[in-house]
Image (cartoon, rainbow, N blue to C red; front, side, top):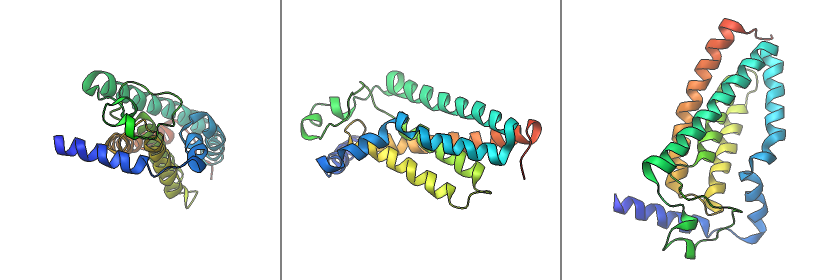
Length: 191
């Protein structure tokens, strides 16, 4: 286990130190959930177009449950079960890293950003793939970019991000199944 933890730290330092000031703004943009609102609005429009009003309401409820689940599970892992210091707070790591995040929480295992973005990617990608050919790969690439931003900015180890993405995939798939069930039972799908 110690070797795996050391590998995670070494990989973090390698990836984090690939950054330079000309890219800092882009990665700060990608990690900020507020700046993603236009993307979310466009996706909500597609849900309305293809699932109708009731389907959109169901979508909003499922997304709220999904984000709540990823955030609360991440907080449980970070602050109760593992309490692993983030790289921006870890001795022997922070002094060698490029810390670009505006703030740095105490604990980091696993990344809530990576989990919620991948959960949304899988949920949205699976729910809209019938209507939008490239939505699934687009959403997965977007999520991977959000996940990498956490390493770039110095707030998560690669293992935090990979674990978050894996949990996000499971939760996103579950949300897709729930959404499909609820839409069949209570919604109408626009044709």
